[in-house]
Amino acid sequence: MLDRYTRKEMGKIWSDENRYNAWLAVEILADEAWTELGEIPQEDMKNIKDKASFDITRIQEIEAQTKHDVVSFTRAVSESLGQESKWIHYGLTSTDVVDTAYGYLMKQANEILRQDLKKFAEVIAAKAKEYKYTVMMGRTHGVHAEPTTFGLKLALWYAEVKRHIERFEHAASGVEAGKISGAVGTFANTPPFVEQYVCEKLGLRAQDISTQVLPRDLHAEYIASMALVATSIEKFGTEIRGLQKSETREVEEFFSKGQKGSSAMPHKRNPIGSENMAGLARVIRGHVITAYEDVTLWHERDISHSSAERVILPDTTILLDYMLTRFTNILENLTVLPENMKKNMGATYGLIYSQHVLLKLIDHGMTREEAYDLIQPKTAQAWDEQTDFRSLLEKDADIRNVLSQEDLDEAFDYRYHLKNVDEIFKRVGLDN
Image (cartoon, rainbow, N blue to C red):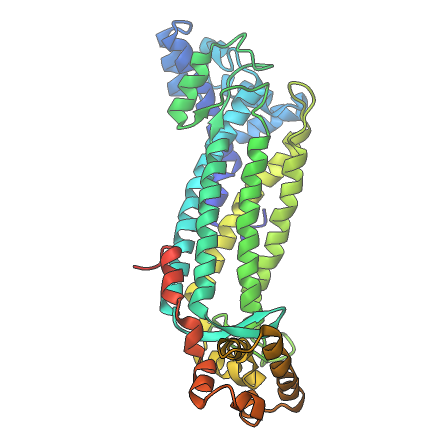
């Protein structure tokens, strides 16, 4: 992944050095298990633990000849040892090492993503509570509908992120797994104890059944869970972009001193952070297709998934880490303009209260059809002539004969639409 989108801690996890360290950890732990079983002498095991090491340059030199990364790695490690080198990779196949190490690396990455998601949810929750009663226009199809609050919008996001956290935990538990079951998954040359020992030491789940590789539906679910998070971030960012339009200007991404919005137009303040989220979400969603394609392998394994996973596993976790961190910062520093929100509610001449007027007429004895047909021409007139909707109602004798001034006051009170805000917040766990 580009340095531009790579945060240091996550980038280190997917470095060559950390990957080879994970491979070495699997190799050494497997030998420890063999030692427990009495296969490897204690003295040899001590030498392996004390001396086993690798040099990345040397691995690359060997791979230039062998064209096999794990063979190159084991030979480089063997060069750091004496006669005890014969125990390196004893009874193992390459993917015993690679897949188990991948599980260990993803476990490390998941710890960062868990913290990212936790902070993201906390920031959304805090903002939802802050703007719980900040009234604004609710829009459907991009058109004014009825009043809502900015806090309710954020509460919806919070509930969505909570679902993501649950899904991610389930998917992460699937890939935080290892397998040391041999060339076709039969444990022919390595007893199940070795797998259990290694996985337990690495904090991984031992996969109950495998072939030469772990089942790739686990990885597909994992990538898909991250793509859903990225898609929600894009969704939230798209909302900010819509509300930051010059015609709306209800929220704005923070614009720092010295920041430039355009090389040509000095006045520009663009929602570039949210736009950035949209682009990166597209990349991650593309990885889902690849992950799904990787599920289908020939028989007990082919290598078609390997090259793809070298890209999508690091890049998806790196990008999601970046997206969560950056968008959390955007929300923390978001400029909210409540006066503009309230002002925009009047832009459609009071038409946003048409349903409440309709219900008032029904409550006073009209059929729904009679009430609807009576009101709709007034809504069209208000829109076409840019005239106050309420004043047109007050001039209509048929309506005035049914609705009192008090009825109209109630119908045109935005607070009517906020009466259940507390209940909704309670439902999503934001009542404290």
